Amino acid sequence: MMARAGKEIGVNLAVSLHAVSKDIRDEIVPINRKYGIEQLLQACADYPGANNARRITFEYVMLAGKNDSDADARELVRLIRTY
Image (cartoon, rainbow, N blue to C red; front, side, top):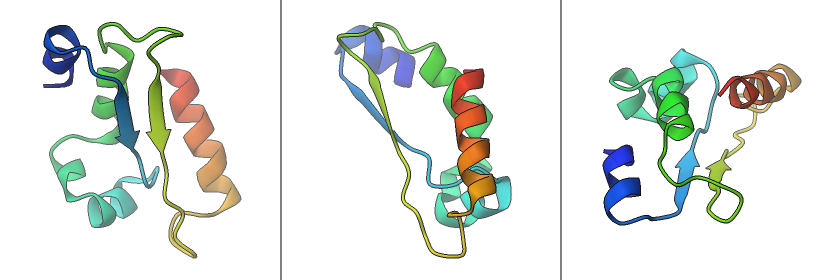
């Protein structure tokens, strides 16, 4: 669906990640059970038209004790760099 939106209507994309681990993402973002973070990030990497003028914005809401550790931050950076 993201690729279609990029091709047909050329919208800017904002993606809410909210957590880096499957368990926490499943709790916070239930659609993660169907489309995991790896699939989501691959779809972002494949998004048509993404360039310096039309960037993808990643959002991450920090919840105390749930997804706000230093390890979470390092894993977030690693995941985004991978894609």
